[in-house]
Length: 143
Figure: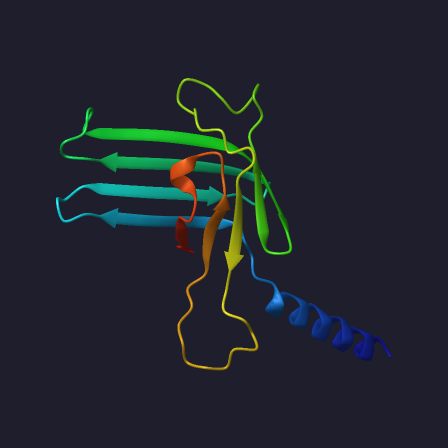
C-alpha cells in the first residue's frame, strides 16, 4: 500500500513540475543600428519577487554617447502577465531612477499543444509602461 502511494505522489510531482514554466531568470535584448549605435536591455526576475533592470545605450552622436540607466522593484505574475511595482521609498536612489510602476509584460512560451518544429523562444514583451521607450520591447530568456 505504501508503494502505491509513493508511486502516485511521484507521478503527480513529475507531472506538475514538467508543466511549470518558470518566469524567473535573466532576459536580454541587444539592438544595433547601421551607424553602430548599440541599445542593450537586461532584466533579471528573482524567485523572491524582486527584479533588476539595466539599460545601456551607446549612441555615437549622442550627448553623452554612453548612457546607463537602472531600475529595481518587485514583480508578480497573473495569467502570464507580469506586473512591476517600484516603491518610492526603497527602490529609488542615485543609481536606480527608472519607475516601473504601471509596467506590464506578457510572458510568452511555446504552447505544449504546438507539436510543430517551429522554434518559439521564451520571452517577455512589455505591453504597457510609463517608460515610453520600453513599450513593445521583447526580451529573450537567457536561462
